[in-house]
Length: 212
Image 1 (tube, helix red, strand yellow):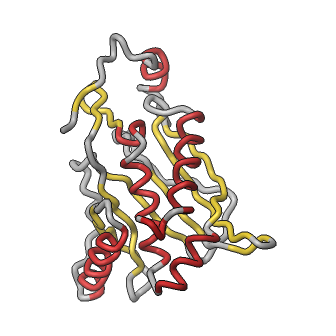
Image 2 (spheres, rainbow, N blue to C red):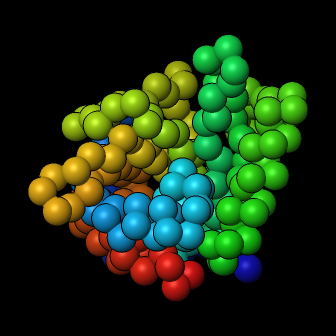
């Protein structure tokens, strides 16, 4: 079940109020994660790398409470579960949004994701970002670029507090394979410490994908 944080006793009340009315309250962190084990697992088990890493990112978000915070009517709501919404490339090289949902099991998430992609290719396309749905993380994938920085477009005025995560092209560095990940979060809800903790937990999830 969802619940609300008591802002009067929250240890981050001052930080919450400081950034609440900023014109641009989001900040971005871009870093590499080690996907050596994930690539190996996907190759050996013939699993989609895209869906496997999308699962890792949304599963980590579901297990890290600050990623489930959302600002609603001047309150901070804590959702019990988050779904993954990700851009999908169309045949004409435009893109659409696809709701991949969530499952705590990798195999089931991949199975559901493959059905979603098949339906998308069959014509079930949408550019509706579902602005009324807050228990979601917005994802994009740039498999063509091993980027070192990233910025997301934002509506004016900016009204949402949904994290945005972008994953790029992986590349070999010696005996490791690294993938860039960009994370945008609302500064009223999270600080650099929290993003760092999310990255650490994401790395742990990627390292044990074959057991999930």
